[in-house]
Length: 120
Image (cartoon, rainbow, N blue to C red):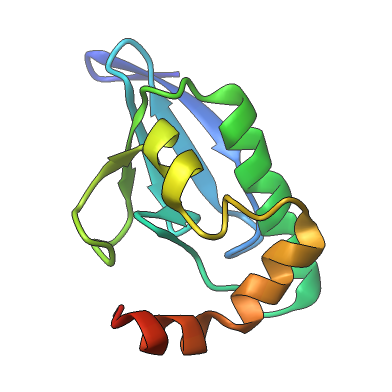
């Protein structure tokens, strides 16, 4: 989809909310992840079904976006304002989960994890 001088590829990535979108700026190695994927974190969800949808959406981006893509989340909640898909794959505790069940467990324990590690 053209967007001024850029071409955007649009992904429907439900989870944080049912109509959530992410955008890959073609030729620029940049992705806008909104509230789906943050630096070191993921977006909040309201139910287990939403969490499972979020897991599937994250897995899709991990498969389909190039590892060198710089991600720009919707908010600067992490240690820095942007990251890369490769870095998040290696360090994000939610993306390190082997399956949806572990992902949901990590989301359920996130408040304690943040407190234990001094995260905001």
